[in-house]
Amino acid sequence: MDLKVNNLGKKYEGNWIFRNINLSVISGSKVLIKGRNGSGKSTFAKAVSGLILPSEGTVSYSVNGKEIAAEQAYQQIQLVGPYVDLIEDFTLQEFLSFHAKFKPFIQGMSIADVVAAGNFTGQQEKYLRHFSSGMKQRVKILLALFTSCPLVILDEPTSNLDEWGVEWYLSLVNDNAKDKTILVCSNNAQQEAAFCTESISMEV
Image 1 (cartoon, rainbow, N blue to C red):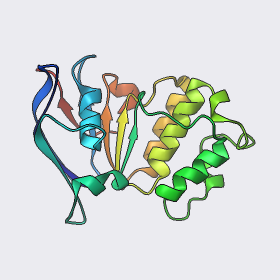
Image 2 (cartoon, rainbow, N blue to C red):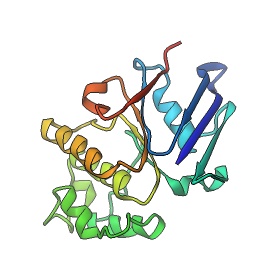
Image 3 (tube, rainbow, N blue to C red):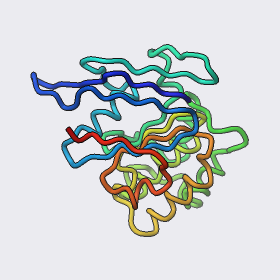
Image 4 (cartoon, rainbow, N blue to C red):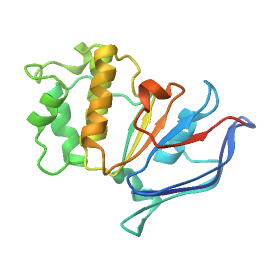
């Protein structure tokens, strides 16, 4: 997916969180959105994903040269962030099946394959409310990388992951996301965005 951000800004209660952000991303790019805590990275991620509306500016999306209407863009975007919740009354199997009804997994990828990729074999019938915070984060990352969406936005993707989990995450991205456009919102580039080849700063 190609992405263009033009003079994007967001304010709350009269205070600008960020303003005048411009970004042009071609399909398949891996871009780090960096900045200190409080610089607006998460708000930017929400605005680009369509989770919230910007106060000014525009975000446009296109796939293979065809522009996608803003109200339909959510079908092409998968967002990972601390504010994205799972349905904890579902088992892992139920949740993945439910998700696939709205956003299918990439061609050739079964639910069993997704379970295995997350190292969850044998835990399909476990309710998500009984998962640890790290396990829940791995589920979010699995959905981001194995859902058939060309744009992935990862906001603090290694939150709650231990050392093994960080290595698992980086390996998963390197092996399965070559064709996806990825934005990583992070102030820990080495741990969360080692695969990124471009960057933009949210600092003012």
